Image (cartoon, rainbow, N blue to C red; front, side, top):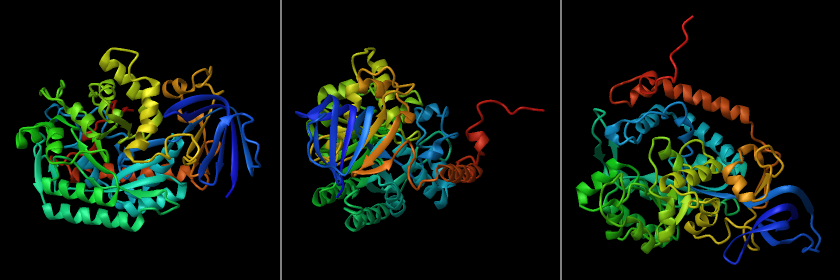
Length: 479
């Protein structure tokens, strides 16, 4: 295995349980692992390659704990600026089913190929995908070397609206059980593939579309197999009200009562909680998450673009909840995810000294690793995987550079990320991904979008066209 030494002006190293700023440091990798981190001159053994990253910043790669790569790119030009008040601004019940029913398999494949490149270009080195196209996701991850956790989604029922006013549910419990069996088989067949970069997790889809039996079975299977368990929970006011109607308790209280929560569980969103202005319920959902060691995957932008904010990121941290970050929708950029988490968190609390750059960077790295039960990810330390990001320190957006983390969180763009290593292999250099034709990816995605837009009437309760569902921002020019 090749041994590589990286010299950088700035290294975000790991020491004594947390990130530390190392100026003029070196990182030595041997194959897929980091074997040494220290000041310049602290390594005297031979190496096969030296990367001179003078003026650059080296950080651990980002761990993206909540995505739907097979469909999210097609949110663009469709779901923004739209959201009915009777659905409390959520697009879950009217727009997402329409998108899914208008897509074809070729579109899903185009989305997966495009997404892997987008993730690399914005610093994700480990991604958790909740989706339906597991084999294609594995194939596309292999093309770019992405570290992929794959969870095939399954559920006992689905939500729908047939009048644009009310959320209804159609149930098929046997389909949920078959879906779980399929998800378990995928893990048994693929876990550990591609030098261990392919892993699996179980993902019953949503708290309101899964029976108690399915969730209990999922919990038992995940514990038995030693894999993470993910579930969309407390993601809309409609869902919150439905669960309180069914059980008289909040979604998170119900999950506690049926024994679902725990340190291997990652709840997608957990944003509509008690107490809170959106739920208008008394309770202590955040305390329950902390007491059970349950992790949260916070995807700020999917809510912020609709005028919804977590209340508040700092409150979860203060209670001891392990807060991780996911992108969920487009853009699938952890750079923007960190930035919006910090800024929205400050706005909600009306304080500038909360949801800091350090807080959100920790969420994107160490907290994600903890949620996955990994002490070899999200950090630059001997024994960790060589998943590394090299950032330009002298670029238009990164200059002047004093505090690398503040610059990355508040100022950096994808153009400032120069090089990505995953498993010790260079997967992007000079912002170029070897073997990936970006023009072909965008061309295929554009074609997928045009096919979808032409067919949105198929899944819409009122049979509306794309221009009726998502009117252009400005009227057409008339010559």
